[in-house]
Length: 553
Image 1 (cartoon, rainbow, N blue to C red):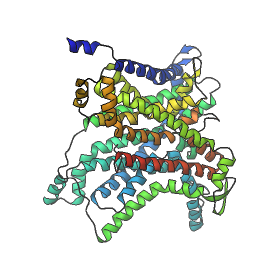
Image 2 (cartoon, rainbow, N blue to C red; image 1 turned 90 degrees about the horizontal axis):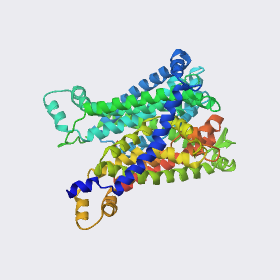
Image 3 (cartoon, helix red, strand yellow; image 1 turned 90 degrees about the vertical axis):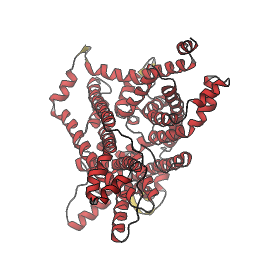
Image 4 (cartoon, rainbow, N blue to C red; image 1 turned 120 degrees about the horizontal axis):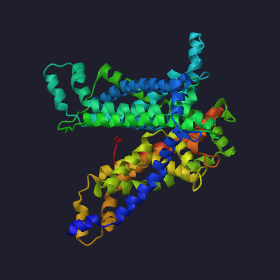
């Protein structure tokens, strides 16, 4: 009887669950509902005319086709690069393998539009490599703009995700299977094809679908180098910005189409993850072997070259930021700190403070919500805590530009007039990146036995006191790890920021984007370098605090 009463009793945990659920409904459910509502309401009447307009006119639906073309090709190239790289680094002793992992992580976590800007510097119409090609071969190469350029940027920025996923999976692979096949006379190629790749199928599929969703949703890269080759996120942005002062229902319909596609991909990913899920205990893990001679040189050369190409955008922006420049647009011979002086002389230095201020506030909220949601989902499960976990994933998988538009629909008028404030950016960052901390916190809670709390309660502690004194300290490594990952993605966020910012709330990513659009490449490089160094320092802190040498995805 007492147990029944305890279960039915309204506790502080029930109150916290309800309060967080209400917040999610207001800041996630309500904005997305308004997008759906506005997409079917035209001139005060309900109808599907916006969707009909989209599918009737080739100018519109061709952007969807373009998005699928870019996404499919970039995903296939990412797998084609990431899979062999993971196999090489797990099977062969690679010198400086820790640096290889770090550079791959930095390349993946850097905003794709920074890669686009860097490749413009290299392969744009006046790019460094373009000039060499034109002079050597006597041709007039017009740069990487369009389909090929978009695919190049996305592939080089996305293959590290495949590499990290597959590399992590290979750590748990039992090498005895491979040895048994070798003893039976199988060649290296046959063992890879018939044993290793089939075992890696779940990781390949999971990483491929994540790459697919990320590439499909990205706005900055096709906006910068697509020129006439428009993709769906670019269409959503341009339609909304052009209709901001009037009827935005067509922009809302575009958002609904994108949301439908992304959510479908998410459920496909979940389906394949369950269908191909298996557990393997690596009784005999793969041990990297030492190669000698030409093979060793070739493998090292391929690994280093691949990672170098992936890291090239970061190297280019850092190098460019120290070139002498004339007002940030024209580079002259020699090195200087002109670009860094320019951003402060032009009064743009405040965006650095904005980024850190908004990011820190967002991370503090993310940590509190992430800890509470993960704890309640694992230790106090009910219908509401389950819905919190699901709702927290929606903003993570939905494109940032769509989320930004939904926020303007919802919070551009009383009673919640938040547009143009720092708060709307903080909220958008929180809901966009909360999933990282929830996932890392949930994972570590699963490793803590409930008996620890039960012992504290049996000794007279209240549930809240046992949570504070027992669970929270034990959760901290996972919480901090997730918070640092959330922090890196928060400060790199562009898609929602570009919709929600004002001249006073501009962030680093918005400043980089606007400087590139204006042709102020020196200023853009200086801002990009600050962002890149912040990400690297945050990663090093992640490794130091977590005690890990790699990131689990």
